[in-house]
Image (tube, rainbow, N blue to C red; front, top):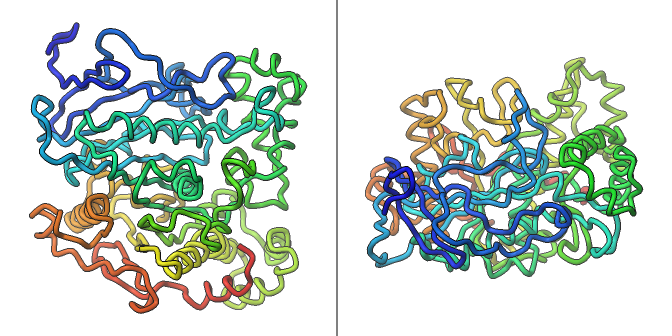
Length: 524
């Protein structure tokens, strides 16, 4: 088939109309497919609406704009848009659209991170063509409303913004996948959702939200900041601050809706700065999901410990050592022992003495940032993930855990990542998982290329079979990689985690004694 510019490309017929993609050397790509109507005008703070069908052939040969966010670098008009509810689809290059597939392929849906205020499915870092072709899966990446999607200005959805629209956007995209992915060669009954950071938080929420239950089968949570609290009544306070910045009254919806997108964004970014230093963890997430009692009923870390999640699903979870990046990102000057005591007391209140008693003896330097970094790592990332994995395992769930423990030989590997400090990056495994060397200008050394291949083999096996170590459905290529066996996380195997590094191996969970301490403290 030919379109106006005459370039051949695959055409599929979805429920909403015809779509034409592009074929590149590794995959067929369909960029910028609308999965909901634009959330603009009166619909700025409303749940996503089904997409309106179109006539003719939709041109899916280029990515659409990212959702509204503060643009870094030169500000360009197309960097941000309120009209942003689009998804991209990557299909292995050997799929022939002219003849029906004998066996539909598993689907992997990527939810990007960025603190719920930044990021985009179309960043070169998340180019899905390599994962798709390598793992033989259909890869979908989606945009969702960022800061705009999380404003809470009141309790009544008819007259105010009630938050969580970004999560409902993701749900609408997952529903769209259920209805349409078969025409792209995907199997709607074999959907794995995977995400990093705020994307992993989103995945954890879909594991708790009842209405998301039928939309996916497996889940991968990468760099999940488990202990960063979701908003509660403070979301309304934030909404008031926001309205004050715009000179609208918080209850005046007409005034709030008449603001330009740039004015809304500017006010939200200003509001992000007014954070109480004694609620230190909120620095990481001013805008984000809100416990509304309806869609989201409790903190994720509580839901996982109490078993209030979809325990029949298989889960791949990272225990990451990532506090260092956050602490050094916030404190750019040395922190004295006295200051560190103030911060620890602010975060942990009456538990502070026990926390200090545990950590102070381990750090002798005058600058206490290393100590704070380790406390944040253990409390936010590592130990609550371990605790949740153990609770899940005890409830009969199938859980695999890993730690990404590799320092790149070429630091520019991490150029596309938001948070880096020295040799540590939040989401450090992403360039290896997406094999982004092929689109960014850095090089992986031969051992790193092997690590990247092995990770793709594990994630692919997980999408195909729900078990990262199963080789049955893997390519001969993966069988030739001599993958170390990745044991399921369980007390009988000694709680083994996979250490993904140049010499990947299963190991007993790191920092066990410290996590025992946090588990006993019982504060996450």
